Amino acid sequence: MLRYMLDINIATYVLKNRPEHLRRKFNENAGRLALSAVALSELAYGAEKSSRVAANLEILDGFIARLEVLPFDEAAAYHAGQIRADLQEAGPPIGAYDVMIAGHARSAGLTVVTNNRREFERVPGLQLADWSPGTS
Image (cartoon, rainbow, N blue to C red):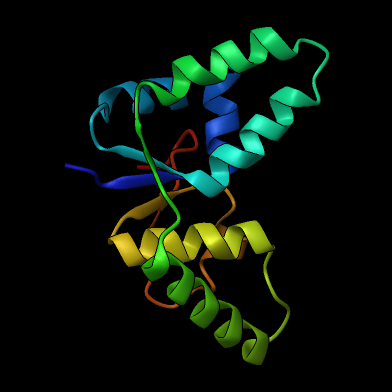
Protein backbone atom coordinates (compact mmCIF):
# COMPACT_ATOMS: atom_id res chain seq x y z
CA MET A 1 0.00 0.00 0.00
CA LEU A 2 1.37 3.39 -0.99
CA ARG A 3 2.17 5.76 1.85
CA TYR A 4 4.76 8.27 0.63
CA MET A 5 5.33 10.53 -2.38
CA LEU A 6 8.94 11.56 -2.93
CA ASP A 7 9.76 15.19 -3.58
CA ILE A 8 12.19 15.97 -6.40
CA ASN A 9 15.04 16.83 -4.01
CA ILE A 10 14.72 13.54 -2.10
CA ALA A 11 14.52 11.53 -5.33
CA THR A 12 17.67 13.28 -6.56
CA TYR A 13 19.54 12.43 -3.35
CA VAL A 14 18.52 8.77 -3.63
CA LEU A 15 19.60 8.68 -7.28
CA LYS A 16 23.01 10.03 -6.28
CA ASN A 17 23.32 7.44 -3.46
CA ARG A 18 23.61 10.01 -0.71
CA PRO A 19 23.29 10.23 2.11
CA GLU A 20 23.40 6.59 3.19
CA HIS A 21 20.68 7.22 5.79
CA LEU A 22 18.29 8.25 3.02
CA ARG A 23 19.10 5.21 0.89
CA ARG A 24 18.32 3.01 3.92
CA LYS A 25 14.93 4.72 4.44
CA PHE A 26 14.17 4.29 0.75
CA ASN A 27 14.88 0.55 0.96
CA GLU A 28 12.94 0.14 4.24
CA ASN A 29 9.84 1.61 2.60
CA ALA A 30 9.88 -0.44 -0.60
CA GLY A 31 6.34 -0.93 -1.88
CA ARG A 32 5.08 2.19 -0.11
CA LEU A 33 6.77 4.80 -2.31
CA ALA A 34 5.29 6.81 -5.15
CA LEU A 35 6.63 9.46 -7.46
CA SER A 36 4.46 12.03 -9.20
CA ALA A 37 4.75 12.11 -12.97
CA VAL A 38 5.50 15.81 -12.39
CA ALA A 39 8.63 14.90 -10.43
CA LEU A 40 9.58 12.31 -13.04
CA SER A 41 9.47 14.98 -15.75
CA GLU A 42 11.98 17.08 -13.78
CA LEU A 43 14.25 14.10 -13.14
CA ALA A 44 14.12 13.17 -16.84
CA TYR A 45 14.96 16.77 -17.73
CA GLY A 46 17.99 16.63 -15.44
CA ALA A 47 19.17 13.42 -17.09
CA GLU A 48 18.61 14.82 -20.59
CA LYS A 49 20.68 17.94 -19.93
CA SER A 50 23.54 16.02 -18.28
CA SER A 51 26.82 15.11 -19.95
CA ARG A 52 25.96 11.38 -19.59
CA VAL A 53 22.42 11.27 -20.99
CA ALA A 54 22.14 7.54 -21.74
CA ALA A 55 23.74 6.46 -18.46
CA ASN A 56 21.62 8.82 -16.39
CA LEU A 57 18.40 7.79 -18.14
CA GLU A 58 19.29 4.15 -17.41
CA ILE A 59 19.83 5.01 -13.73
CA LEU A 60 16.50 6.85 -13.69
CA ASP A 61 14.73 3.87 -15.27
CA GLY A 62 16.16 1.59 -12.57
CA PHE A 63 15.05 4.02 -9.88
CA ILE A 64 11.45 4.34 -11.05
CA ALA A 65 11.17 0.57 -11.44
CA ARG A 66 11.37 0.41 -7.62
CA LEU A 67 8.39 2.66 -6.96
CA GLU A 68 5.05 3.59 -8.44
CA VAL A 69 4.86 6.58 -10.79
CA LEU A 70 1.43 8.16 -10.44
CA PRO A 71 -0.13 10.13 -13.32
CA PHE A 72 -1.06 13.71 -12.53
CA ASP A 73 -4.83 13.35 -12.72
CA GLU A 74 -7.91 15.55 -12.43
CA ALA A 75 -8.08 15.31 -8.62
CA ALA A 76 -4.42 16.31 -8.35
CA ALA A 77 -5.04 19.28 -10.65
CA TYR A 78 -7.96 20.53 -8.54
CA HIS A 79 -5.96 20.18 -5.32
CA ALA A 80 -3.00 22.00 -6.88
CA GLY A 81 -5.25 24.84 -8.03
CA GLN A 82 -6.75 25.19 -4.57
CA ILE A 83 -3.31 25.14 -2.94
CA ARG A 84 -2.00 27.79 -5.32
CA ALA A 85 -4.99 30.06 -4.62
CA ASP A 86 -4.74 29.55 -0.84
CA LEU A 87 -1.02 30.30 -0.78
CA GLN A 88 -1.38 33.34 -3.01
CA GLU A 89 -3.75 34.84 -0.45
CA ALA A 90 -1.44 33.92 2.45
CA GLY A 91 1.78 35.42 1.11
CA PRO A 92 4.60 34.51 -1.24
CA PRO A 93 3.89 31.49 -3.45
CA ILE A 94 5.88 28.27 -3.53
CA GLY A 95 7.35 26.87 -6.73
CA ALA A 96 5.01 25.59 -9.43
CA TYR A 97 6.36 22.03 -9.26
CA ASP A 98 6.06 22.04 -5.46
CA VAL A 99 2.41 23.13 -5.78
CA MET A 100 1.73 20.30 -8.22
CA ILE A 101 3.49 17.67 -6.09
CA ALA A 102 1.70 18.91 -2.96
CA GLY A 103 -1.66 18.78 -4.74
CA HIS A 104 -0.91 15.34 -6.11
CA ALA A 105 0.12 13.94 -2.73
CA ARG A 106 -2.77 15.54 -0.88
CA SER A 107 -5.33 14.29 -3.40
CA ALA A 108 -3.94 10.75 -3.08
CA GLY A 109 -3.70 10.87 0.72
CA LEU A 110 0.09 10.43 0.62
CA THR A 111 2.81 11.95 2.81
CA VAL A 112 5.39 14.04 0.95
CA VAL A 113 8.97 13.06 1.78
CA THR A 114 11.09 16.20 1.52
CA ASN A 115 13.87 18.11 3.18
CA ASN A 116 12.25 21.29 1.85
CA ARG A 117 9.86 21.66 4.78
CA ARG A 118 9.90 25.47 4.57
CA GLU A 119 7.92 25.38 1.33
CA PHE A 120 5.66 22.39 1.91
CA GLU A 121 4.66 23.09 5.52
CA ARG A 122 2.67 26.09 4.30
CA VAL A 123 0.26 23.79 2.45
CA PRO A 124 -2.92 23.15 4.46
CA GLY A 125 -3.78 19.49 4.98
CA LEU A 126 -0.50 18.15 3.58
CA GLN A 127 1.33 15.46 5.55
CA LEU A 128 5.14 15.72 5.54
CA ALA A 129 8.06 13.47 6.41
CA ASP A 130 11.70 14.56 6.55
CA TRP A 131 14.13 11.67 6.20
CA SER A 132 17.23 13.77 6.83
CA PRO A 133 19.69 12.28 9.34
CA GLY A 134 18.46 12.78 12.89
CA THR A 135 14.78 12.84 11.92
CA SER A 136 12.17 10.10 11.96
